[in-house]
Length: 301
Image 1: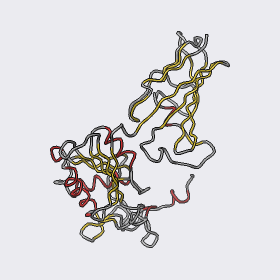
Image 2: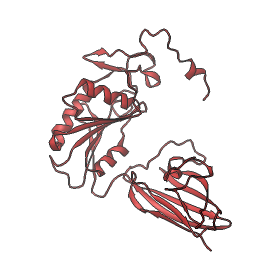
Image 3: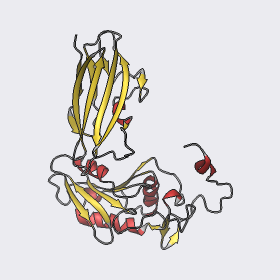
Image 4: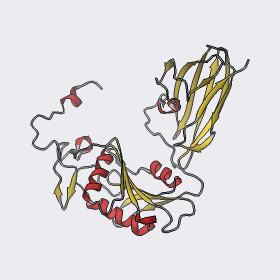
């Protein structure tokens, strides 16, 4: 019997989990699955092997692999465990981010194979993109389809120690009904290349600009950030509580840290990251005689 492979839904936003299911294998048979995605021109791949159940079925929403690039039950494991093929690329998304990601999945069962494709989108049809270069701000505003002033809540999105503008997340937020402003604060045109000595007032300007620009529904403006951006949004929520409606912090630091390896070399990685009123905000490295970079500098990769 020839195996069949189905993926549902076949076309949806990137945050929608998919059901990857193989049928018509023999009971107990090994089924090898390979997922191939071209990300900004670079091929990424992951593989895993599964045992078919007594009905000859493998269902990734139910079954963990017996071997491969990921372990444990994870319906989307074949995607998040992908790595680039013969490339150092770390680009996860296409440029522009409105270009969808298309993944081919191949199922192999003792010489026979089946193939299916699914599409992951960051932006729904009608979502609009607007570059922002106003009031010293550098960023990109994504608006839901048919957006009008006052019709949507808003969110300001901040990157981590990689800097730049997080357009993928902004496009997805806009697809989910938010006026989404991805604001850069370093490593972007016209801004510093380093995180050191970043004034918090810059983000206050961004919050006020966003409110004025989109007139958010119920005056709701959230802030969202990951890693150093997660630390930052927690700090902004604590510093400007009347201007921040909600905080979404992904893998944040719960305390203020130094510039670390995103620092200006002239200031050093133990120098300040954030300023308020022109003065450095104290951080956990200051005057800390027990802190050492040795595990990072001298430890294993």
